[in-house]
Image 1 (cartoon, helix red, strand yellow):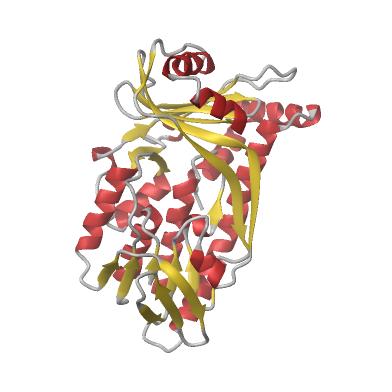
Image 2: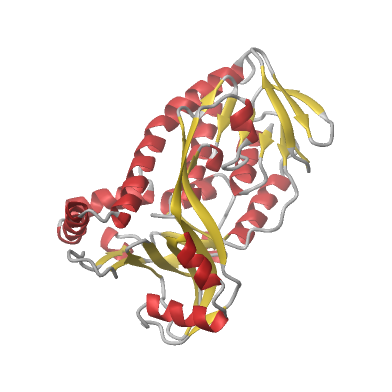
Length: 379
């Protein structure tokens, strides 16, 4: 049983079904996700190999540059830093892909699997026993399964019911997202303006369009959201330092609260967690869905490593999966948390350390390569 109807849930359902197991996908009804996901090359390579997205260039926009601009007014400021994919002999770092198009492509892959069925409802309760897991669905259905995959998000019912220990820390900052039209396009560059309370990031969405992710204090974002369209557009021009000419608001601006979530282990007792059921971070360094797809790649590897015909196979899969994911989850969580907190730090030595780190990234090729590997999710 795979629980969760988002992109991680869809990808997990395909992965489990392709292992040969009779698979049921629990998909609650919900509105389409109009956001985009910046997926780096390792994640895109997995999508290709798994048959989930045959050609990312057909549905997305290549990301060829990452540009970081220190827009703070601090005493110690960092230099502008540019990563270019050509420097690493790559055509692109990855692709910015509309989540709706990703879901359509994942659905097409799912449609060709005869051992994968779908139930459109939610999970009411989960009981984990030594031999099986028993699930009660919102429509009253009772099911008994060997393996449970929780892909049901940050408020995961699977995680809670199966007794996983999770730590969640909230921030006073939030994220505001929308789509913008720019008079001067940004090409293939993702541009991050770093301010005192978070980055103002423009991600290329094709043509003169860009996806905005702005992180700041909740009250600042709420006031901006309520100021009206004209005032909001003027503010976006100021935050982007008027580098792109006239700005047009193409979609309503939505605000999301930010927090971090980590689990002690990502799998146990025949239950595994993928995506935001296992980890959640602020949208720094494009790690969200990239990390979730690495979860599913490792789940596929665990399913391939275990004899699925033997009794108790699900416990072996969950144990193997937890071991495979431990290092990546710990490392990525530490790096993303450190990056976010370093940007918010008001302590002068911390600001100096961050500025010095960006100078080092700018000037030292070995450090640039190490940062590239972390950001790309190279293992």
